[in-house]
Length: 128
Image (tube, rainbow, N blue to C red; front, side, top):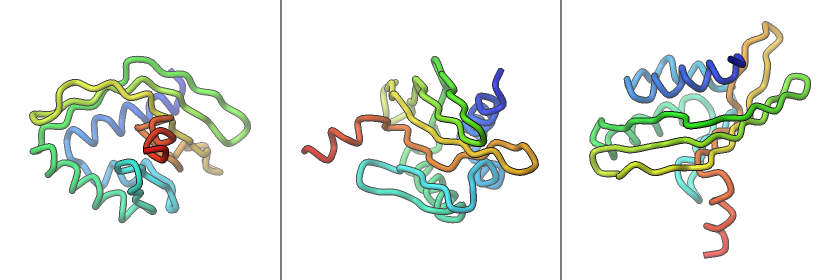
């Protein structure tokens, strides 16, 4: 398993456990999270607050898992194309074709700098 895949699995577990500290530490200081099309959270603190709001919105029942993933690595950057499955008490199981960008730190740890679980659907949301 690629270390980025391990980080994504760790993030999924932290999201479901609502472990905001662990989750925040998976992101770079200046990371961008697409909360929903047209709304981004920037930086670890905003991202943690966004995930807290997301947990509340989904009635603390959010389930996230990966159903396939490809990691393309070039130097200290990795592009991840993932088939992400999300569901909750108020959300039927939904497949998203997510896009993530990870950066490798000088210590070798991979951190997420762009978290876009909506993938190319962002393009469609701009056309609407």
